[in-house]
Length: 102
View 1 (cartoon, rainbow, N blue to C red):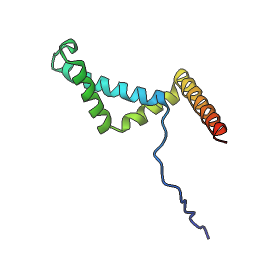
View 2 (view 1 turned 90 degrees about the horizontal axis):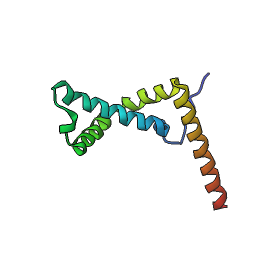
View 3 (view 1 turned 30 degrees about the vertical axis):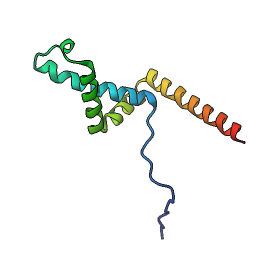
C-alpha cells in the first residue's frame, strides 16, 4: 500500500537564474515595442519611461515569459554556462556568509 508523504515546507515557486529574468524582461520590452511599430509609430517618438512602464506591466501579466526565457537559457550553451557560473557564485557567497555567522 503506497502512502503519500506530506511535506511541511511551503511550496516555493521555481528559482530562475538572473540571466533568465533579464531575458524575460527583454522579451516583455520587445513585445511592447512591437505594438507602436505595428501602428507605424517610430520608437524614437515614444517616451522611454512610458515604454519601460508598459514593459513592466506586460512582464507582470505574462509570467510564462520566465518559463520561455528559462527554456532558452537551457538550450543555449553560452547562456547555460552563464547560468551555471551564476549558481556557483551564489552558492559560494552563501557558504561564505554562513561561515562568517559561525
